[in-house]
Length: 360
Ligand code: ADP
Image 1 (cartoon, rainbow, N blue to C red):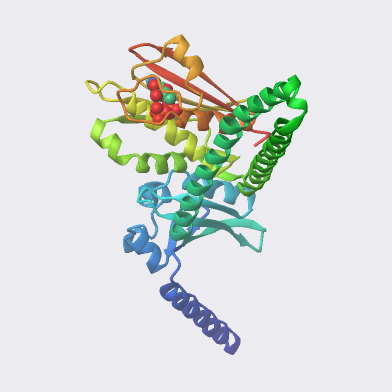
Image 2 (image 1 turned 30 degrees about the vertical axis):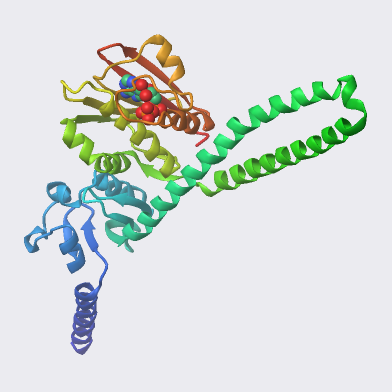
């Protein structure tokens, strides 16, 4: 009898402890059982996801909208099925970024997941800093690339002319030969400086960008939010057919690819019609295919061949720099991918981005 009483007291004490922990933690946290029923949540979770007391006992399916990111239910199912922790960065549609951890709640008796504990850590400030850094890195990459192409090539031409000059009879003696020797040294120095700058910086940056498990829908949402103003001003309608959402890739690059292609799809639609854009994904034989369709001005066969060149612009009545597609092309081809365009002038375009999944 006493033993039972003690057990009840112990249970009460640990329950109180748990309750105390739950009402005082500053971390948004949820308990969801194996039938996807929401069992408990912390006050910060309540505030962050606008949860109400009477949501306890409801299925997560019925309140999934509150969490504002698409794959939460699928992710819970995966953790329950595998019993393995899932960690990923997600963005809610109100532009907050979270490190989301879904931990299986293992029942000792049968060693099976009896539910999950979901924790969200707000990483919005960190992601904001990261975005700033990414922007700086992208600008630097572009600058270095410009040096590589735009200075190296004329420098090469100069070196060749110089070699011819050296062969002239007048160049072999007197003052001229001294001047030529000086010029040769300085040409050599410039070449060394540029080579060093370009190769070491490129290598460093390439290593810094690391791949991670991404959720395509979250990143698309992020891009959509960054383009909220042009979308609204042009009355753009973006529909999606996402058949493949989770894969490993470099976050900044995927965001940049989508951002450039979608912003172009809006920019290059005549003002008399609303841009209608469809973003679709599928995967075939280890190849990810992203398709972006628009009802814009379209591209001629000649334009299709040249728009990936740097500074190339076809339609000049709209503001632009001509580097967006050049960067997209570089990011895709550096990963062993390719881009194809189907287009009809006056009707619209379809940009198909192929990315091999085993190499990313
Ligand atoms: P920018 O938009 O800054 O000019 P981009 O490199 O993104 O530079 O695009 C290069 C050119 O390709 C654009 O100037 C435009 O003429 C053409 N273009 C890009 N996307 C589209 C599209 N979706 N529909 C029609 N033309 C496009």
